[in-house]
Image (tube, rainbow, N blue to C red; front, side):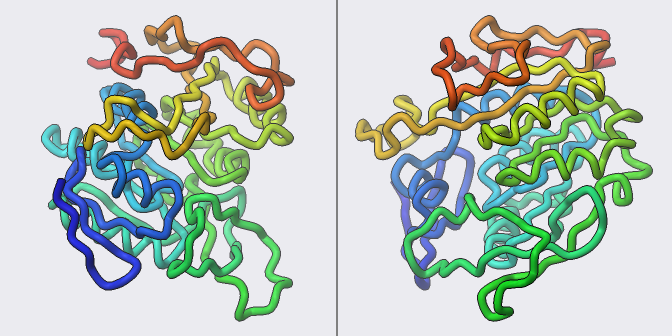
Length: 297
């Protein structure tokens, strides 16, 4: 294991997916990279299968680049590109560092939030020098808090940015802001019919999100992989995350044929959420996802 301590709070780790600049105070992503040499590897397995679907890869809420780096590396050799959005200025700097460390020049990284309408959003100013969950920061339209306690960032619509692009995969992880992002790219969704991988960990907002995606012509499946991977890169047996899992939905346009592993649970009841009622095993093996031949031509 290669780990180089840098100026606080950062260290440089030779991880499974490449060199990663990690904040040692980040209780989820930073801790995962420094402890296991990887982060959300079971979630990433699905994404690595989905990027076989042709078109631009768009990642909204890229954070430090745990998914951006391996996805970009995989599609770079095919001449394909990825657009990544990360609105937290300090985290955005970390994302750019990780892209540079791994020589990835097929990524356009943008320091913006994405939403239903252009404007400004805000979030509480984190102290990155203290222990915290920096990936759990939620955006809000409110700027009523004292200016020295908030960070304001531009919010853009994907429909405005991607008018001439064909999007193949849209990944959204924005801490409860997912529906607003989707509403802001409704035209792109109808024009391109991309595959979707959307976080859905706010049970109180889940039904509206599910029903909007259904109305947009998508079939949905739950994917809730645990954060801890027993076969992690550093071979660490201790599970520092307990039973914590990610709560995501895979969205596939009704007209697209995609082989879905039996372990994925199809969304049939919009009122159901795994956080409310324990669900059947939902640990789908990402490598089993394969686009049909017709969709790869």
